[in-house]
Structure formats: C-alpha cells, structure tokens
Amino acid sequence: MTAERVTIAEIAGMAGVSVPTVSKVLNGRSDVAEATRARVEQLIQDHGYRRRSASTTSSQMIDLVFSQFGGEWAIELIGGVKEVARAEGVELVLSECGGDWRPRQEWIESVLNRRPLGAILVFSDLGADQRAQLEARRIPIVVVDPVGDVGADVPAIGSANWNGGRMATQHLTALGHRRIAVIGGPGEVLCSRQRVDGYTDALRSAGLVVDPELIRVGDFAVTGGYREALALLRLPDRPTAIFAGSDMQALGVYQAARELGLEIPRDLSVVGYDDLPVAQWVGPTLTTVHQPLRQMAELATRLVLDLARGTTPAALRLDLAVDMRIRASTGPPPLTK
Image 1 (cartoon, one colour):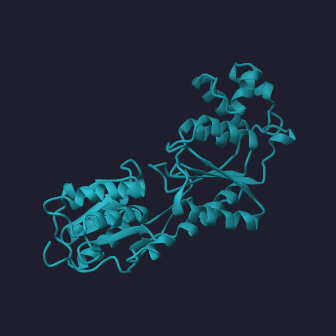
Image 2 (tube, rainbow, N blue to C red; image 1 turned 90 degrees about the vertical axis):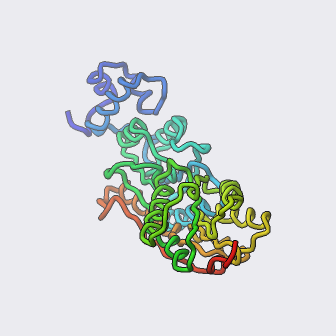
C-alpha cells in the first residue's frame, strides 16, 4: 500500500474505526476520543494521506497567530510578515487566542479546513496533539518568541533575550546605579525569564546583591509597568533605576514616576526593551534594548514558506542579536534620594 494510493477507507480499516470518524479527525473535530484521534493521526502521518478534492488543496495563505493582538509590538511583527507575504504573492490571515498561550481547537478546525501553506505563532505554543494534527496534514508551523521550551524539532525565531537583559543592566551599573529594579513580563514566558536572568547575571558580575524585592512580574503592557513601578518607587529604599521588560511597560514606569513627582532621568533612570517607534516619541526619549522585530517576522515567514515548499532550511532555530539604543532616559544616580 503506497502513500499515494492510500484511501480514507483504508485508514479507517487500519485504525479499526469508521470512515466518518477518520473524516472528523481530518477536519480537526473535537468529538473524537483522544486515543482514537492519536491512532488515526499517526496512520495519516505514516501513510502521507492527502485528500484529493480541490477544497483541501493548500491555499496560498499563511496564518499569523497572536496570544493577544494589539499595540505597536504586534504591528511591527505584522509589518514584517506582510512584506514577505506580499513579495511572495501569499495572503495573510490574522488570528488571536484571546490572551491564552495555546490556540483553541476551533482555530485548528479552521486551519484544517482552509489548508494554509503554514502558520506563524507569536507567544503562542501548540499542544502535542494540535501539532500532530497539523503535521499529519503537512501544515508547517514556526514559533516567534516561544512561551516555553518547544523542543529542538520545532522551528522557532527569537532574539538574544538573556544578552539583552544583561546589556540593559550593565548600562545602568556603568552609570553608577547600585539599586536597580526589573519589571519582567509574565513569569511563564521564556523570553521574560531570560531577560530577568540576564539582569541578575549583570548584577552579580558587578558585585551587587540581587534583591528579590526589586524583581517584579509584569505583563509587558503599560498597566503592568505602571502598577509595579508604583510599588517599587514607594519603597523606603526605592531603586534609582528600573529596567522594564518592554517599552510599553517603560511607559507605565514614566507615568508612575510623574505621579510621584520624580523626574526622569534626574531622579530615576529607565531602560525599556524592544525599541518600538514610541521610544523616540516620548519625553525624555527612551533608552532601550533594540530587538529586530521586523527581521524576526520576515525570517519566520521565509522559514514557514520554505518548509511548506519542501525546502530544507539551514537551521530551525534562530536567535537574532540585540543592541542598546542609548537615549535621554538614563543618567547617573541622584546624589541623594
């Protein structure tokens, strides 16, 4: 029995299930027992089954999936994907997970019905069963900034987050700051943990004590930066500098400092992360870690298209370099607090 000639009925016979059950699995339906789904998915993958109807031919489109859509950070990534997709004559479909780290099964069903060339997931990882469903139908995925450790076999594009956190903190220690706080992103997100790890390494390298009171968990949004900065700046021994895990959180730090009558950078130095366009619009302009978001998106798009077309990429995992953009929000610590 060759991969080209296997039929849905033969898949059903090998799995010991009905043809309608195999059809449900092919369409990503959720009303199939997990063990049955896994058995059918494995047979589909082993025998390379592909439905022959026109409606299931791969569409000239790619899916771009966000955990939660919004803000300049997402716009930068969308711009990078659009640029490559337009040049390749491929359409773009945007989806979001409503704040969840994993797409809902409804998205899987939609993808299996539409048969895109592939999918790019941003801050959104697939479960093993979801990945198996897409792999069985030869729909490749690429993850941008994985939430967790997705495994060496999953194509992923990121940046040097640990080094970025270290660079931001080293910049502040070089200015003379000794009491430096960090507001990371969600604790379960890998890039956030890496940035905080880089921060702690830089402190230790400078001979400074890592104070747990100065390590806060935010949400990468303005609200998280504002909330945690208020708490930090109301400490009896407040920090003289704050490293925010994103530019949007840095804007929240700005707001908290204004409310407390603190001037940046005279009373408080602030470093962001991302180097979004807004970093150059705020006053004072924001010192930040530049990560190449558009380039990350462009590489992810080229990678998913290569995989869809059967091209073997040179590497499945890429972490792009970051660098400091020093502007007006950082300076020496105040002589007195």
